[in-house]
Image 1 (cartoon, rainbow, N blue to C red):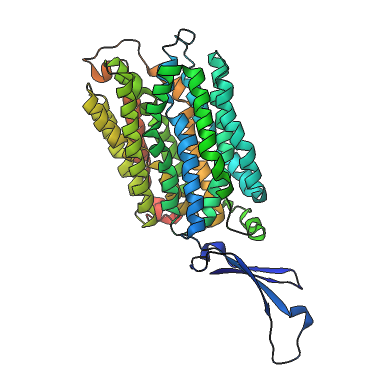
Image 2: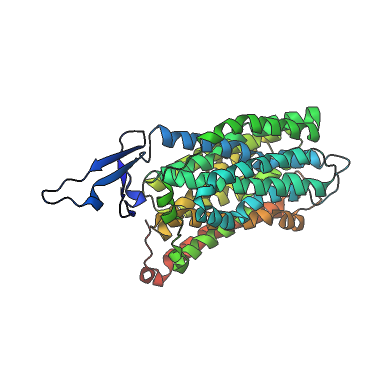
Length: 466
């Protein structure tokens, strides 16, 4: 049982370092007043010691409640924007939106703000930990309110502002207090915990495209958005009371001071570059696979099926990779392996796919390996800093690097997409440049790490392959 000892008369605090709270004991937080005994004259200023027993980490009912609640929030609220490919396919067929080149920007803003806003929101959340729960109560209605507001607009610009910006800002402000709570509850099994959170959206993505597609086809986007908003409110609202931190305010104040020494390490920038390059191509398949399937003559339901299978594979991959980072597998080689296999899947399978079967095979490989960078961010963070106060900060910076690619999906795709469709050609001609760009991004991500491993000076910088 981890303890925090406070001498009442001197107002001094003796706090065990938080990542040493690894013992398991009672699941109830207790406060005891223990009289101090001495063989001589008693000191009235040292009569009593208050011992506060903290709940155990890496397990126990309290830790699992927070993780399960976080899983539901992540799966539903993040699963919605990453399934935007279904919305994009629907919007592009509507008379009021047809021909607009800015439709992709709706999904780009919803996802991109979550990535690009990560460093700032993470720093503010860590700096003011006592307001974490208040932050959740402000961000949650902002996020869901974006969907409600979107249901009352009839322009692409309005959808960008509501379903895109409003939803994205609400989600990024909501998720980082939750991640800070996970960071407090899970220490030695942190990779597994963040892997579970990362794969939550994949689990939702296995179902969300079908639900979204059915609602859009039956009711149109306005009613569909209102139904989704009500569903998210009912499913997530009752879980907010379960989101609680583990540490007392005094110890949270200690962790609020982030150790920024990782910014001086070359390895941090190597991982950032690999994440940035990989992120430039990461999002194209999830956005354009439904449109690709439609161009092949497949139905919208089959397009949603491809996204769902990719999400299931993503869930499995992120859990496995998160588990492997906890087991001290080499993070550089995990990055290289995942990026290389994803590159092969894109160039050799997606580019040649002309049937539902091949597209499903591609979605399985790509979902498992390409999306593994979620839990790998934890392993990268541990590699560049062993100070737990820096974990959320490094995680947020790697999210930012990946998010740059997400924001650039719209402009890049406008330059890469062709209007010509030739089913017999590579990537049916229209998506040829997109496929080559995506595969090249995955390949270059692996090359960045390989170049670092082969760099003769790496041993002098304290690099450790583990």
